[in-house]
Length: 107
Image (cartoon, rainbow, N blue to C red; front, side, top):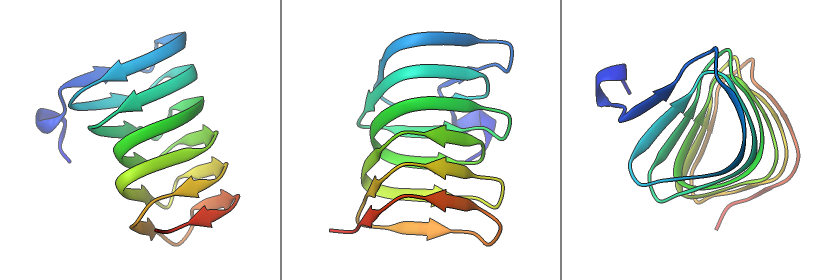
């Protein structure tokens, strides 16, 4: 997904906590701690550090995530992804080089 197709991008200089809800697509390039809920797409950029439980339509991870993820459509772990948490999704793509520590349920 190119940056022009992403509705909102949170820059590398942003660090915040709380409950994040959105409808379409969001890319996090900074730091976030809390919970994320969306029917849309979440992209965790290569420099991002996210400590959150995530419920989303689709999730693409390029950076670091600690927390459990539930995706209605798909989860993508790129080669730079570092994930510690459990996954629940009907479709999972894991690139060689990514690191994943947790359980996965595909239903």
